[in-house]
Image 1: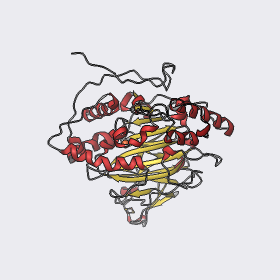
Image 2: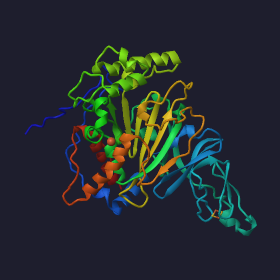
Image 3: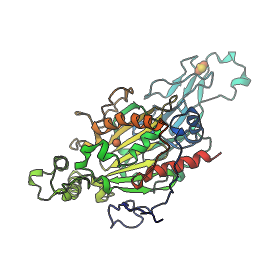
Image 4: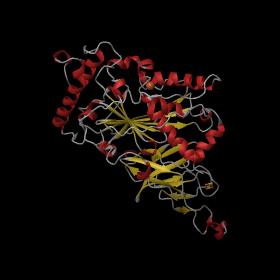
Length: 451
Ligand code: FES
Ligand SMILES: [Fe+2]
């Protein structure tokens, strides 16, 4: 029986040079295995994932622009662990957030500036480099107990393209060997120069993997987000698979979905995008098929006028979303003016919940640049980067105010979670538009098998 293989494989720019970041990656046949569904519900799987995935993978902890002055720190929480990530005189370091005396949590504020940490239990004091500098009533301790000056226990920490990753293994492989993305891919966006302009953590009613899966495909756009049909080429998406579970989809923006009958009219959504790119829709001579290119050209011109360096970006990057996944739980929506970093963080106790942690980052501008619509920022958000806004937290039953599309996902995913529980459901059947999901599960499975 012959398979109709790669019927819908899309190459967005057939002229992209081989080996370039834009070029379509070679197709990988990942088979048709149907994975079980227990990993979405039971605590045992959660425990295994903790041991094999979260305790062993490089995890996105934060971004360098959140640590500007020596002493700046933030806490990174993953399941039961809390990690202090801080800028010291010697660079960025990470430590378990626990006092070496009797194990009290050292820091409770999620971010701040402290060059020393004083334990709230008995006031043992540590430098932010981890050194223990004071033991209260030291003469009451046997020197054999404290002679080695037990400081804070370090966590492996690496910086990559302005992003801080940590790894709970004692001696992990270097990050660049495991991240899977080609060199220069994330670096091109200059995330190290961007500032967080909004940080939202909301609790969602499904397993974290249901979150990853929903954001790794654009197959559900027409059904769950029908209003995107006017401006997103959902059937023209290019899917690319990299090593170690990393992947990317290029979602062309500024073109109608091929599912729409009308491929000519410059619909309201396209008009909006033209306006956003500095073009007057009333003067626009082309039809719907010309909008994406017009946006690219206008952005290129705008960048030149404003002295923004877009020389490292191909035209497609100026208009489209390069949604880039890093195993296990990250997707970054990459755009020249800013990035949208999302993390799918498991709930520490309940396998049927996760935290959707999103940071919107923006390149500093002279104030002229407005945040584009894709960022979904509430009216009046300060994008200057002068002030790091506090993280907003939303409970499971609150609308995280992330814009219509993300609210639709938040409302829908619990229904997937519940449906998957049913005796009538065996396991997921992924098509080619869902190849990133299979790729993710192949890597997940590979790591779960490692002793
Ligand atoms: S537990 Fe920290 S000083 Fe005692
Ligand atoms: Fe969605």
